[in-house]
Amino acid sequence: MNMNIMNVDYSTKIPNNVNLAEDRQVLKALEGWHPGYVDWWNDMGPEGFQQSLVYLRTAYSVDPRGWAKFDYVKMPDYRWGILLAPQEEDRKIPFGEHYGEPAWQEVPGEYRALMRRLIVIQGDTEPASVEQQRHLGKTAPSLYDMRNLFQVNVEEGRHLWAMVYLLQKYFGRDGREEADELLRRRSGDADSPRMLGAFNEKTPDWLSFFMFTYFTDRDGKMQLHSLAQSGFDPLSRTCRFMLTEEAHHMFVGETGVGRVIQRTVEAMREAGIDDPTDIAKVRALGVIDLPTIQKKLNLHYTLSLDLFGSEVSTNAANAFNAGIKGRYHETQIQDDHQLKNSTYPVLKLVDGEIKRVDEPALTALNMRLRDDYSQDCVKGLLRWNKIITTAGYDFQLKLPHTAFHRAIGEFKDVHATPDGILIDEGTWAKRKGDWLPSADDGAYISSLMKPVTEIGEYASWIAPPKVGIDNKPGDFEYVKIET
Ligand code: BYC
Image 1 (cartoon, helix red, strand yellow):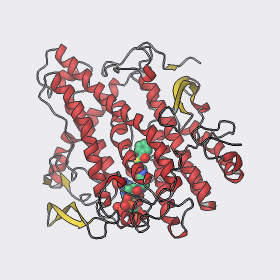
Image 2 (spheres, rainbow, N blue to C red):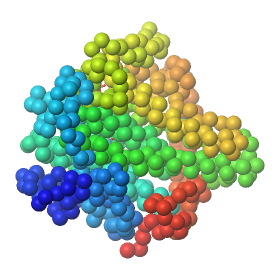
Image 3 (cartoon, rainbow, N blue to C red):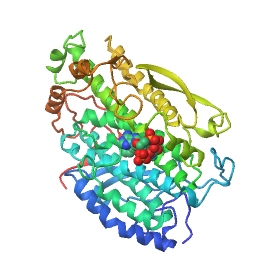
Image 4 (cartoon, rainbow, N blue to C red):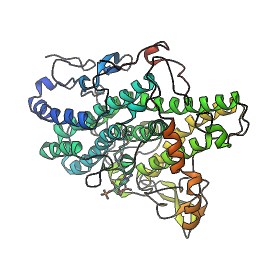
């Protein structure tokens, strides 16, 4: 069949724009993997609502000008497909030792293991997040939010398919085994956990979900951007298309947190509360106080910082030299794209003090990507803070210092305040509850997590969105539950 790469072939069981109909072996491998995926979705995907009609977008093209269509779909019937951004003619490897050589259409033998490891790590995060969020449908603050949760979930499922396609097409038997393992590991499981720390944490409530989609999905954005630079063209094209979907996930996070803040300041204004740190008074209104929002932010931001690995990493240097994983916006950077003689300032612990030390730029790539990430995070905070100041409150949300609450890298063995002052174990134990959500904070937030399923209604602790999904009006039924 002659197929336009822009449009997706829906005639095979697995929608795709990679001509699977003529790639029998890979089609067979994917069809063999499909039942296990559906079992995983049924066991570990959203709890309940599997028979509900959800107003979801599905990709039908990879043309950035119009790639998705919206319709009511039951989640298990979602068409999870393999979609790669169109191939760029004569694309060259944009960095590393092979700088300027034609991009690879197959995996070079010497980089197989390194490449497979990165693809597996990326793939592992996708089902993990679905597992972490599986119970949230039951406490959705509105049908609008419930629909957004499920949209994020089905797309993370598709991102798993994206990585599994690469494994099965380009990595032979090893790839097929890895694809099976991706369905076997479980978030938070003691024996068989997901690979990266943040993906084994709980997402206990909707504020966590919004923080996760703001901060952790944004790590996804940065990592996907770096892999989109890859000299291995199929990986690059896969990640480029994933980024199109990823934008909505971060939108859900940013607007979600923004709407929580909006509702809190509105309720405080109506009640005549001037002091946003008067937690008991604010909580009596059935909204989430700003200091608790700051604590949740501290938690999710630092868990996400850990996802960038160690500040100084030979793994990162090897992946860059090999032409497998580049920098954020690599092609827009003005330098030799090989980092032969350059340095990059890295925050390190030197004689018990936090210092900036110049390291070879090649080994400091994780730190550089993390810095790009932190800058990207700030943008949303500015918008959140504007909601607070517009309501007339003198309170600012801040990103904590990178030495605060870390489990990976330079600062994993020390304790620091959110301002970056090093403290001892005893002080940490005493003050921790001021900076990270405590059991009481968790219990209070949980007490608010009552489902709201009436059309156009919202829970007490969150403001309605400014615009509907796909420009739908406020009274749109985003999820038809009774089917
Ligand atoms: N937890 O040299 P180092 C997303 C391990 S999110 C546990 O410092 P490297 C999404 C590391 O594996 C994006 N272990 O690290 C978001 C290594 O082990 P080995 C996911 C960790 O390799 C929301 C050792 O420590 N994609 O898409 O330079 C919803 C030394 O590591 C952790 C990617 O991450 C950790 N946090 O960098 C859904 C991209 N960190 O080899 C989806 C692919 C490090 O000694 N992955 N370790 O056994 C990578 O680029 C890199 O593997 C990492 C780590 C950036 C993760």
